Length: 100
Image 1 (cartoon, rainbow, N blue to C red):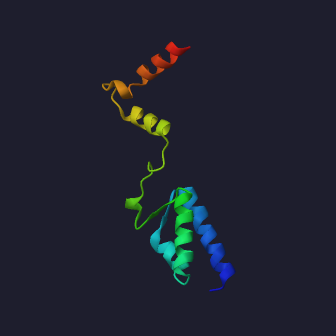
Image 2 (tube, rainbow, N blue to C red):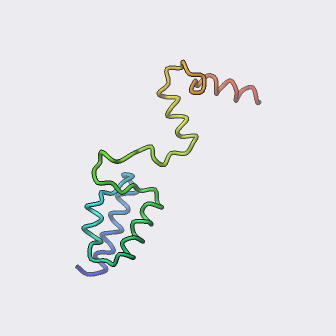
Image 3 (cartoon, helix red, strand yellow):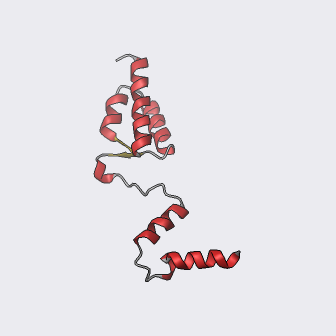
């Protein structure tokens, strides 16, 4: 496999990973298996810094891994039945209104 083609395949895999949120280790390893350990580590670290998860199977993918605090609160509020004050949407709205 030539270097340019391999580089393009890695870029395409990263684009797909950015869109889906994860890359399967097998898919990545198939493309980088002939590279030096240093290059492999660089590529894996770059992918992880892009907030793309490297997983062995889709079951390991955690779609909430890189949520910000605000995003996590919104998800918890959407799951709440309203019985917990910390996750009650009305309570948050009331506090925000009181500041105005």
